[in-house]
Amino acid sequence: MECLDLFVRYASLTGPNRKRAMQADLSALRTSLQAVRVSALQEGKQAKCLVHLTVPAKELSVVEIGVNGIYLSGILPGFMEGEQCTIITSDERMYTGTLRKCATGLSVRLDEKVSTVEDITKLGIQVGDWVEADPNVHVTQSRFIKARNLRAISNFVILICALEMLLENGRTLSKETEFCINFAGEETGCHECWGISGGTYCPEDFAESLRIGSPAITAENGLDEYSVAIQGESLERIAKEKNIPYKVISGMGKGNILAAAFQVDGFSERGHEEGIKAAFKLLSAFLSE
Image (cartoon, rainbow, N blue to C red; front, side, top):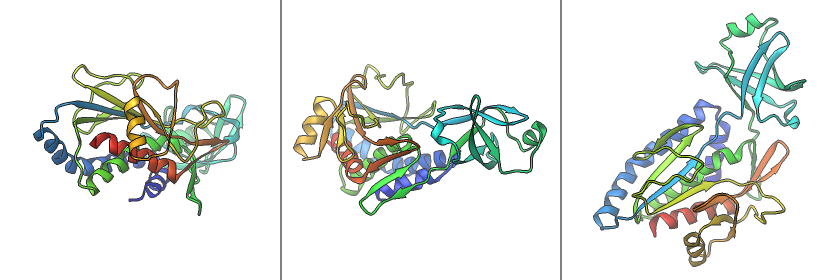
């Protein structure tokens, strides 16, 4: 699947459905990667590598249910007012509504016939429920992709595309590699996973680690949407050898870091196919070198 198609697919799914789709895609690849991993070990390539990333989930959640509405906590920018949203209950019932400003930040005007707190709670809505603004996904003719929360899914898309590229080209992992994915606090992995703290954890028996990130473009960091953002000498060397466009980043922690950068404009985030492809091509080369 094309990288932008994956973005559209994940961004268009809501809450738990997106997480399940990601886990299913990873599971399907894992079956194929087991053979690749065995091949790498049989060739005597004993160095170990840890690749880790986080997939943020709950941007907004229900913090209070009152007589005047459903109040939210989380990232609460004022420009979200008027956006359509979905409340996902603990048993995965979904209710639509509209985000609106209130004295404490944001609340939801529910698209249901409710007039009391009891009416709302009878629907199964409770404090802690997941709330997502509609993603509004667009892919332009010039191959820009625009949507809400692009950066939240970009790390996973880059990993999946890199692994698919390995398999399609018949290449093997050059070292025993552990893929650790943190789904908003729930840690899982392709083989086994250790706890990750601040994206810098690396067990003693690992020779190298790499973190996949998704920085916002600013005037200070000099990044753009058409290059992969990197930190680490080995990544820079590979990018030069493979003629992959890159920008060097700093201030994102220690170790090897690889990322596609995104413009953040108000309610929307924007990336370009060239930068996303540069990111997963470099990751694929790093894993197979």
